[in-house]
Every structure is written in C-alpha cells, then in structure tokens.
Length: 134
Image (tube, rainbow, N blue to C red; front, side):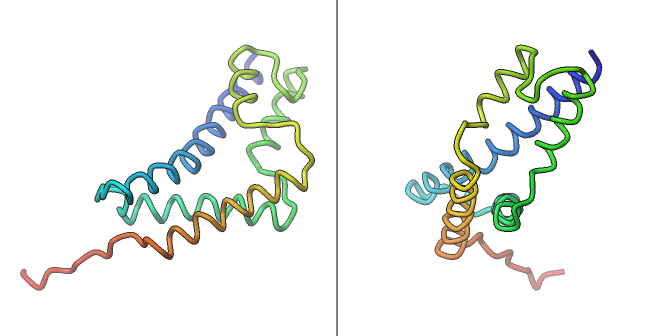
C-alpha cells in the first residue's frame, strides 16, 4: 500500500510539472495578448523555460523521464502495473500519458520546447531595473 501511494504522489508531481509547462505557455500567450504584466515575471519565465528544456533535452538524448522511471519502480514494488491500479494513479496517469510511438512523443516534446524558447526570445521576461538610490 505504501509503495502505491508513493507512486501516486510521483504521478501527481508529474501532472503538476506538465501542467506548469503547458498551461504556463498558454497563459504567457494570453498574457501577451491582454498585456498582463505578470507573464513577463523573470522567475516564472526562467523556470518555465528550464523545465521544458529539461524535457526537450531528455527527448533529444532519448533519456527516460526520472519521474516516469520512479513511478514504474514503485508500482513494481507495490505489485502493480505501471499504468497504476489505484483510482488516483489511473486518473493522473491518463491525464499526461498517451499511447503514441516514442518518436512522436519525443517530436512533440522537442517541438514544444522550441515553441517555448521562441516565445521566450520574442517576448522576453522583463529585466529587473536596478535602482541607484540607497
């Protein structure tokens, strides 16, 4: 039971990671269109870029995502299939995993990373203005 809960927690982190990247990009585009200042926040934009660059790098180097690996490991320890047998595990797992060939998923990851990078370059985060006042 404990290993299953750990695997579910890992999937929840994975869903949060994917959501931050995908929804973050959507919010950046909307924010640019509606002139929302917060979408140019350097912390948000740099973390967003770094997170997708990691995913794109894993795809280019054909490296399995550590979260996917850890989930599988804990599912095995719990005597479950990798897709998850608990309701929460199945629900979260099915939100982010699709049954596509690996080359298609890797292409999607790389393409999305390039979209995020292009957005970052074309609409960069605001630069911090250093005050000369003491």
